[in-house]
Length: 459
Ligand code: PLI
Image (tube, rainbow, N blue to C red; front, top):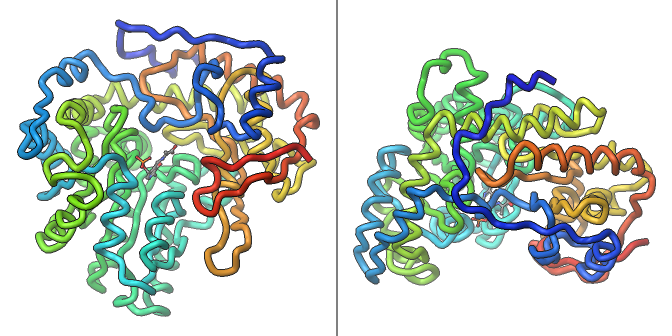
């Protein structure tokens, strides 16, 4: 591996948090007590926590300073106006509705923009996003390109929408039966794969012909912008902020989980340009979140988010972010470990089908691989496969996604390359003993979003 390709951390460390390594004997008990579900482990029992990049970011000194100028007024907080100006400058949307996190925005958008029975095409599903769409009577349809479902296919922009699939859906169901297109940048469950600017432009052109709205899931849009700058012709010399701005010029609005690319620990928002839709959203935000000028966030959190968004636009920040993830992925590839390729923006995804060929998908190989990695190393990861996919709301059968993965998700500005080495070594060690990974069965299966709290035992 060429170490020159990986930039050093573009920050100095000012405050540290001690982490503790426990023993394998302790972890044997702990993972059993947690029902082989890494979500149910206590943070204190984890050595390196790669469960998620959501809300696990390290804030900067400037963000912490911003927390001190939080205006906690119930209405009209000055931090709301700072956030609104920042969002307008970066994304170009007129209206913003703050929410406590991304799913708060999804809840409101799904209620105001979906009529029961309508279709909601998207580039692969995300758990909470699809849940809210279906809860409001929508039918989710996956229109991501076929390549996205093939873990070993190393091609750029695997998050792209297949325009033929979208056209076919419009022809079959009628434009009036499509609530909106939900376009995620990047696509989390496809492995953090980006969408090209060209694809966004083409989706806009096609939907404009039929008057169909397009809402982006903006959660990891800065990572997406980095991939465009790095890999799409014509954007080499464009700034990250200008790329983000152009991306969102092809959308009618967006939902955002601020816990990712806004580099904060909590918060989200919903944006749009349509005044009527904004009024509808305001009527609901007061029911579920709070006044339209805080929507479930403290004033200080809105300030930290405004500052974080600007920091995320810095090239050095996002280059290091994406390349640190790539470093871990490259180390695993060098050792012959099967992962989703190309390496995405926020995480390295182990391909559990190839890692555990001795297990069937119904034996939850990714769930078991995540549990066993914790047992071996104290590293916490997350299942993103059949357990996360849940059951079909009509037939009650398990969705059986082609991608059966374990996600090693890297928090922003938290860990160093040495931590990545520890994780890589742990995965390589486990791969050598992979036949010891046992199948699992449910002992408790929640009705919705089951992966969060389900419990298992070994078969
Ligand atoms: O966790 P929320 O409610 O702030 O955001 C929900 C959400 C929406 N879209 C996408 C693409 C996500 O990744 C997402 C949350 N992701 C989590 C929690 C994750 O661990 O990936």
